[in-house]
Image (cartoon, rainbow, N blue to C red; front, top):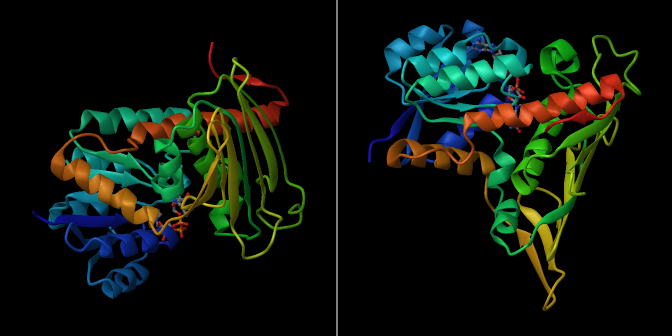
Length: 326
Ligand SMILES: NC(=O)c1ccc[n+]([C@@H]2O[C@H](COP(=O)([O-])OP(=O)(O)OC[C@H]3O[C@@H](n4cnc5c(N)ncnc54)[C@H](O)[C@@H]3O)[C@@H](O)[C@H]2O)c1
């Protein structure tokens, strides 16, 4: 089997994480090139990984005969690069959020869709062992999802600016918005609140640091999310509980959960999985490229989950429930 030649577009924090994931799949792929903004920093990043460094995407595409580009550009810094990669016939794994507005997201999905390439979005929570076990289990319909995401960090400069990151709901909470869609399907409505509670005096910080979202289904089902950036410094805390007809799941991460059967014979399953979801995500993209077929999470899922996150933000800003279906 031919090894895929992988290029990385964006050599920042999560770019390093993806480079590490590529190195975990040495039989399937190798990182051959990295493209960044700054020549010196990109050269050092690429050199550390025995890859070629570029500051021009088109040159990287021309010279490297790439099979796959992993795009980790921040959401505000995307101006047609992903579409250019697809037009060059190169497959794609794109980091979330796909874009900052729906029009840009839909246009990207449409343009990439016209190229004959595999294109996946990086909602890697779905690849965790506990999440996969839940999906395979006989749970019945999910009635209630209650999720939380809490941290306390200033992150990158761009992260603090609504115009650049879209805010915490769009940039971080969107992983669980996607999980809600994955486990419960499309909600009918959303109501949310968000506020900058404790960062008024932090220069350049104009996004929410507390938020709460309620997704509703017309048949009565509910999903709630609460998030903050005022919690324990240095800790990225995520958890969610899922209550279904025949099972309750209490998740402390994508790999870790206690699943309790609530109908029929009582049974408790404790899951503490070993899977690196970034590696599993790449292995899935490799399968789609080499064996044919769609990736588990196509790029269009990025636009669909963005739509719910944008609606939650709009609901908070307009202080009203937003209808998502007719
Ligand atoms: N899946 C996850 O858990 C996860 C975690 C962190 C970040 N992310 C996502 O990954 C993306 C990047 O986040 P990050 O934390 O790595 O940001 P970062 O600021 O650390 O890195 C981004 C890098 O992209 C480079 N860049 C920007 N525009 C470029 C261009 N046109 N060509 C080449 N390089 C360019 C920047 O110079 C920077 O080095 C964001 O969309 C973020 O939401 C996902």
